Length: 461
Ligand code: ARG
Image (spheres, rainbow, N blue to C red):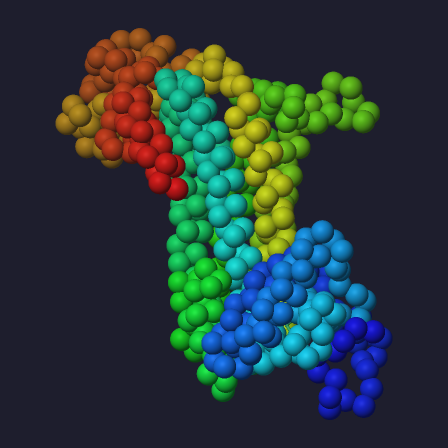
């Protein structure tokens, strides 16, 4: 068995079943180098408080450096008897510095403030990695929008044809939420930038240690205001879980559309072979597995967020061992996104749109009916009447199996006295798009402006 951190008041070691339950090294070992960084900073404040002699500090820092090298090389790994990453590294330190020097490091700190700090360090690093990978997806969407500045497509509500929109407008509608996700991770980072180190088990330290010095040493903006809060709070972890889950949910909405677009029935898009998979039995198959995995993994991240919030619900202050359950959900969300995002941006970047099909479907399903109604409004007709008249146009066309632009002058006059032949000017996709030219609309010049602003936001992200 390993070296326990709490043996003194116990007459025997833990039951095997407890040790098995308690052990967390299989998931918290990824915090090992952060733990050692924390130990270095802690050794310095112990020295600063006069609790560690010059020689002992030197010996301790030297042993920690050797330990870090052995962790990195894989030479030092947790033993079955090590309860957690902190226990294992204490053993490693004592093996290298001897019990006399190594045994001095734990003064004034607890695994409770340690682990709360290390998780923040780890999540802050990965927030940056994930944000960078999300920006790559935004880049791929922007590149597709730039490649198709004037291609129209059927815009949908309720998955039914609604009004024509520019393909670039639709693609950017997926880019904006992802840009907000990146900004959300950055905003989160500002709140995560406070170090709990120095909170001790819950009440702080009596040894004159300076939490601000440790915080600065570890790259934090400062230390927490309240030692109980510092050890017990996990809202920082939950907020990270939400921000990453939102990324996955936003990807899943793109994914669902890609899956539909790649069907024979839609035929909007062809996925590159390098981002498609085949079937083991059906030779003709080409499947959108990247998009399906994205859609599926979003469920997994929602589960991680939900599980974590459920763990936190109703927990009394301060530290409870339940809090050990905070790590696996967010580690899994990070691992999942860091594998998913590169594949996702590759898929988006390489997909090829059938622009002819998009253009020809854009005006179908009577998607220009709103343009008739709005044309009538510009002639002074109340919208309530205009809506009825345009609806009547659709009804007539539907019963005769024709399109709105097939209505001749007599048909129009028969439907309403307000419908003069000039209405045909708006019965084109081009006219419809160009008319929606307020800020945020789908008129080509507005979408071009929007694209410029999206690129600007991407550059700031
Ligand atoms: N491994 C624990 C965690 O991840 C930290 C150890 C705290 N243990 C304790 N008995 N106070 O939360």
